Image (cartoon, rainbow, N blue to C red):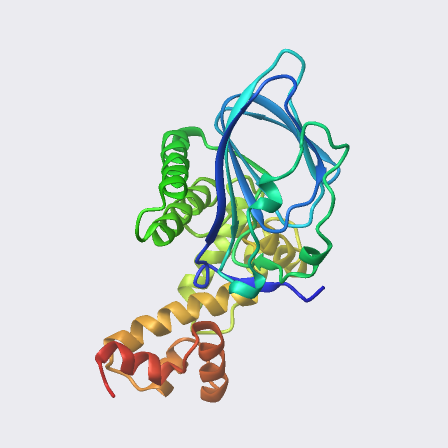
Length: 306
């Protein structure tokens, strides 16, 4: 199996493979299986028990369940119970026709009678994708966003069923909105996980970054008041934001660099220095790696310079 392709927020352009709505009573079940893409399950009514890996979850109305590829999962409804849900299978980006597969992999399965779903061996080798700028929770309760989640999934189903001209683009926009709502509900505006027990300290570290991004930053003074070492604080920072301190700082500096490039008043060398990079060549390489083009080309493209 090849290494996962990292997908950041800039690259995210989901390809929707299959959408459906289902209702189940106490006899409903999905036996042990793996899937070969990502699946969002949004519960609209009732409850069901889902297993993901070795962990059991009880999903209720308003819960969003995220199943990643190649992880064992199963579902059942408790005795006397029932539930209803939307499901959407997708890849974070379109991988091309050779990597695509039919939704019949999921549709033509006798879920009610199989002890477990047979593995599609050829699909175990398809390219996997991994989110890098954030982590998807296994389960999230939509809370105040529940009506909007419901609307988006209903729209996804309608587009997938009718397939009007341009439906692929509209489904992509719909699913991006779902992911955007999920991020807004699970992270602060700085990208800190809402459930992080160290949210206050991480916010202080980010504020230090905002104020001193032009220089080498010393986080010792902040973390010392929390009774921990800088090394441990960096570990907590990555757990809370999904990014290392170094990568978060680089991303922040690049956003400032792009702002200065848009203004077009400074040279690339001056911008590099203002953003904390003494080595112009390193700055240019890093900018191209993160943004897909050199800084000079980025600035020229905005000003229409040939």
